[in-house]
Amino acid sequence: MMQTVLSSTLDSLNTSVRNNWTLAEVETLFALPFNDLMFQAQTIHRQHFNANEVQVSTLLSIKTGACPEDCKYCSQSARNKTNLEKERLLEVEKVLEAAQKAKAMGSTRFCMGAAWRNPKARDMPVVLDMIKGVKALGLESCMTLGMLDEDQAQQLQDAGLDYYNHNLDTSPEHYNQIITTRTYQDRLDTLDHVRTAGMKVCSGGIVGLGESAVDRASLLVQLANLPKQPESVPINMLVKVEGTPLADVDDLESFDFIRCIAVARIMMPESHVRLSAGRSAMNEQMQALCFLAGANSIFYGCKLLTAENPETDKDTQLFKKLGINTETIIDDSTEQDKDLKTSLVNEQHKELFYDAAH
Ligand code: SAM
Ligand code: DTB
Ligand code: SF4
Image (cartoon, rainbow, N blue to C red; front, side):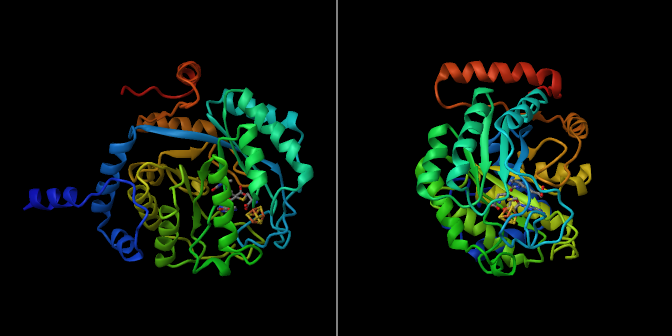
C-alpha cells in the first residue's frame, strides 16, 4: 500500500519547465498534505540542484526613502509615516566599498536597490559606473531601480548587469489593494524589457500582505507562466513596518509560507527560489524547512534595504548546523573565466563557510 502511494506520487511528478500552469492545478498543490508537498518539492529540487548548496546575495540601498510610489508595505514610500532616514543616491566609491565588504564576507552577488519609481536620465551614468565597479570586483551584479524603459534596460545590460530585480509583489487580483501608482502591466512590461535586453530576471513577491490563499497561488501562476521563468524568484515574508498601512496585518501561518516555497520550487524547477525578507522573524527550524522545501538562495548580511536581516555569524552557524555550503559563481562568459572565478570564490569560502562533505 505504502509503496503504491509513493510510486504514484513519483509518477505524477512532472519535473520539466512548464509555462501553462492553471490556478486549479496550483491550488491542488497547495492543498496536498504537508509531507507529500515537501517530498515532491525536495525530489524536484534534487533533480536540478545540489540540495546542500545555497546562493548568497548581499543587498545595499543605494538611494533610500522619499519614494513617490504608494506601496502599502514599504518603509520608503513618502506616503507612509515611517521613521526612516532619507538618503540621496550614494557615491560610486561608497557603493564599491560596501561591495568589497560583501565579497570579503563570502557573498557572490551584490544587489543594489533604489527607492525610485524609475531611474531618471541623470542617474543612469552613476548606476552604470556602479555596475562596472561591482563587476570588476568579480561579483555578480543585481539592481532594482523601479520601472525601466527599453533603452534603460539596454544600457544596464551593456554595462554588464547580470540580474534585474522587479517583483510582481502579489496576485493581479489583490494588486490594487497594495499599490495604485503603477499597474501590474507596467511591471510585466519592465520584465519584458529586462529579458529583451538579455539580462537575467529576478522576480517574485511578498506574502503576508493580507492576501488570500488563492492570491498566493495566482502570484505563482503569473511568475511561472512568464514567457521564460525568472532565474531568481524571491519570496518575501512581509516585514511589518510601523507607520505603513500594513503594520498590523495578521501574521501569515508559518506552514503557509513554507508551502509557498515548496510550490514555487515545483512550478519553477530550474529557478533559484530565494528565502528573502522576513528571516529575522523566523527561527532556525523554520528556515531549515524552507531549505527542505527547495529554497536555495538568501540575502546575507545584517541589513536588507532598510530592515534588519540575521547577523552573518548566525547564518554561518545555521549553515554549519545544516551542512549547507554556499554556491560559487558560475560565469558563463568563457571556460577560463569560469574556472578562475570558481577557484577564487572557493578559496575565499573555505575560510568563511562550513565545508560539508559532498
Ligand atoms: N523601488 C523599486 C521598486 O519597488 O520597484 C525597487 C526596490 S523595492 C524596495 C524591491 C522589493 O522589495 C519590492 O518590490 C517588494 O517586493 C520588496 N519589499 C519592500 N518592502 C518590503 C517589506 N516591508 N517586506 C517585504 N518585502 C518588501
Ligand atoms: C526582494 O525581493 N527583496 C529585497 C530585494 N528584492 C530588493 C528587498 C526586501 C526589502 C525588505 C524591506 C526593507 O529592507 O526595507
Ligand atoms: Fe518605492 Fe519600491 Fe518602496 Fe514601492 S517598494 S514605495 S517603488 S521603494
